[in-house]
Image (cartoon, rainbow, N blue to C red; front, side, top):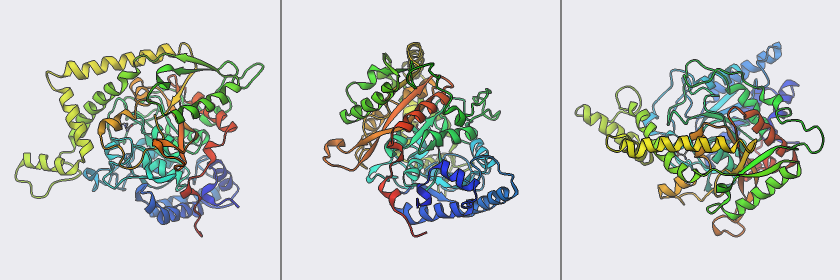
Amino acid sequence: MTPLHLKTLAQHIQALAQHDYTSVRLTEYYLNRIEQLDGHINSFISITPEHALNAAQASDTRRQNGTTLGPLDGIPIAHKDIFCTQGVKTSCGSKMLDNFISPYNAHIVEQCQQAGLIMLGKTNMDEFAMGSSSESSYYGPVKNPWSTAHVAGGSSGGAAAALAAHFAPLATGTDTGGSIRQPAAFCGLTGLKPTYGRVSRFGVIAYASSLDQAGPMGHSAEDCAYLLNVMAGHDARDSTSIDRPVDDYVSALTTALPAPATGKPLEGLRIGLPKQYFQQGLDPDIKAHLDSALAVLERQGAVLVEVDLAMSNAAISAYYLIAPAEASANLSRYDGVRYGYRCANPTDLTDLYQRSRGEGFGPEVKRRILIGTYALSAGYYDAYYLKAQKVRRLIAEDFKAAFGHCDVIAGPTAPTAAFAMGAKQDPIAMYLGDIYTVAVNLAGLPALSMPCGFDTSYAGETDGPRLPVGLQLIGNYWQEAQLLALAHHFQGLTDWHTQFSPIAAQTLGA
Ligand code: GLN
């Protein structure tokens, strides 16, 4: 019999509906796994058993009374520790917020509660979501369940690792420059960054507000569709949240792609391949896996067309000016006065500011604050910040032109598979790994990553551990349903997303 943690989300939904097991049983099972095994992975910052079991009990009562709140009622979930959770520590991976108990819930946390989802705890992440490896967390690095010598990706690395270890069937993440897609790729998961404005940022600790977007992470496009149904929608408390109807992403899994009159299932679907995404810098093994995945889609009738994203080379530079500039402003609120870390025995106000910030922030956060402050200062503003904003516009125009020739864009999520822990000490080397993800955020487009193979020879390793490879699909604005449907179709033909990490294969005597 399949152990509970290896069942799919759809199987859990069905089993709860048929009363095969209760939400309390499922929740206890996952909590037990986390307790027994997370010491190897470090995917959680906080575990909330009391909260979870009370919520699970309430869900079971609703089910007995025939008043369930929807398909996900009673299903456990892990929230990234960037989402404010009322009465629960919300640290954002930082010493600065180690003592912060949020007085309110983020919009998406509220939405999940209203759908009956059970929060198991808060997942580990790069400090203030700044990073691509989840090594910059105050709570220690997250390890990849496929190989604990490798990083889980970042910044939503805890969410990805928790899923890959099968500590939870669903997780939330945020993506400012790739933080849902890249850890999803490194851990063999499906993760979606929605169109900017599709999901409310209310109660999401701000990193770079014009780029931040929350989204679902799971084992399949179907899992993401279920969770996006709960997360998406207008919220007046976020002025950038857009008031437009939300699709039913689950039913759209089988209806969002245009039905071909005759011929093959993907007949006529034009998939754009940006020529800049398949050039130097891309690991040849990753390219080989992408080519095989694209061949699968081509055999289904999709047409592969080359598109030109000419500004791609400027994306990293523009992103690493705009994101730190916004971060330097957003993080000015952590001053030791109102909430968060305060230094001991300050001698005066300046000492209070300097030491609270000096002791509360880690090195990567300080580096970003310095870069951002510099880029925004008089004399440099025009040369750096304003220039970066102009490049941002050109990047968005590139995508617009590309979508004149194709329906969806495909490419790598990251240039390599998960790298070894500690391998990227040079910040620039770390930043360059974001080459295929940041442009999407600069343009505000939706994109997802899904598994398309395993690399066993990264960085010259012969016969190294099996590390997942991600394929990125980028859609036009508001085309989340189409992206999920295409990924779902691919997952109906392949089994990359159903494979288990070594930690997932460990079964406890529960
Ligand atoms: N790696 C990118 C950065 O460090 C993206 C992080 C994110 O999306 N939160 O900024």
